[in-house]
Length: 406
Image (cartoon, rainbow, N blue to C red; front, side, top):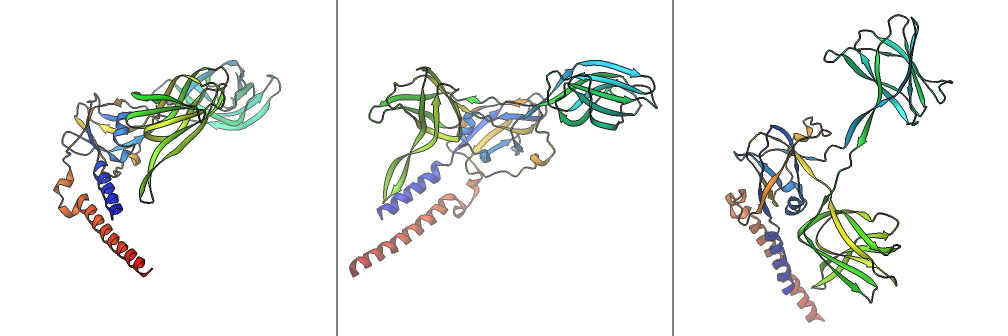
C-alpha cells in the first residue's frame, strides 16, 4: 500500500507541476502583413520545446493564426557569362558563342533580350575547343519576347546537362530580322546556411576520474534547453583521438524503489585532425555530463565548449501598431489553422517581429475556471487514484490469502 501511495503522489505532482504558463508582449510592428517571429531559446524552454502550446492574441483577445516557418531555404543568384562573339549571316543565322571557362555543369542559360514581337527558332550546340561542335537541341522555338513593364525580357533556354567550355546559340533569321541579345547569364539556386543560436548562461564543472581514466564535465542550465549541436575548442595536445559521450542521470522504479542510473544519449569522437563540432538529436536537458576517455594520455586542454540550437520561427499575419500578447499554456493542444494551406510563399524573406517581457504566470486565469468540478484535471486524477486504491486493496487481499494457504 505504501508503494501505491508513492505512485499516487508522483502522479499528482506531475499533474500540477507540468502546468507551465507564460505570457509575453509582442513588440508592435510598423507594417501590416506576414511577419517572422523567432522562437528564442527562452521561449522554447518555457514551452518544453512543444510549439503546440503557443498562442497569439490581439488587443481584443482574438486568437491570431500562425504557422511553423523554417525560413528561406534557397536564394537565386545571377551570374553573367562572357559573350565571346556575335556573328550574323544576313537572312540566314545569328550565332552567339558563350564562354563556360570553368567547365560548369549547365542545363540552362538565361538570356536578356531587347523587346521584340519577333518569334525565333534556335538550336544550341557545345564545344571544348571552339572549333568542333556537338548538338544539344535543334529547331526549338521561343515566343513572347515582349514585356510591357521593361524594355527587355529574360528567358531561360534549356538543354541537356553538360560541361562544354563553349556554348553556341544559333537563331534562324530566314524569315525575320535578328533579335538583340543583351546579356547571357546563369541563374543558380543556392542553399542558405542557417546560423545556429549559441546558448548562454550555463555552469560547468570539470572533474577527473582517475580510476576510470576519464575527464567528466558536468553542465547545468537554469531551465531545460534544447541542444542541437556541440562544439569543442581544444588547445592541447597537438594530436589526440578520444572517445566521448553525453550522459544524463535518470531515475526509474525498480522493485518498489527508486533507482538512479546513467543513460548515454550520444557518442562522438574528438579528433585533432577535424573541427570538433557535432550534431545531436534535439536534446532537451537541464543537466548532463560529457565523459571523455583519456586512457593513458594527458587530459585535453579545453578552452571552450559551446552549445547551439537550430533557429525556429513561426509566421503570422500581423497588423501595424497592434498590441499582441504571446502565451504559452502547457494544457493546450495543437491549433487547427488554415494559414499553412493559404498559398504562402515559404521561400520569401519576411520582416521579423520580436517578443519581450516573457514571465511565468503563477495563477493563470484560463478557461478551465469556468468548468464544473467533474470536468477538471483534479477530478480525473481523483478517479484514477480511487481506482488504483481499489485495485491495490484487492491485490493485497489476494496476496494475504495466498500466503495463508501456503
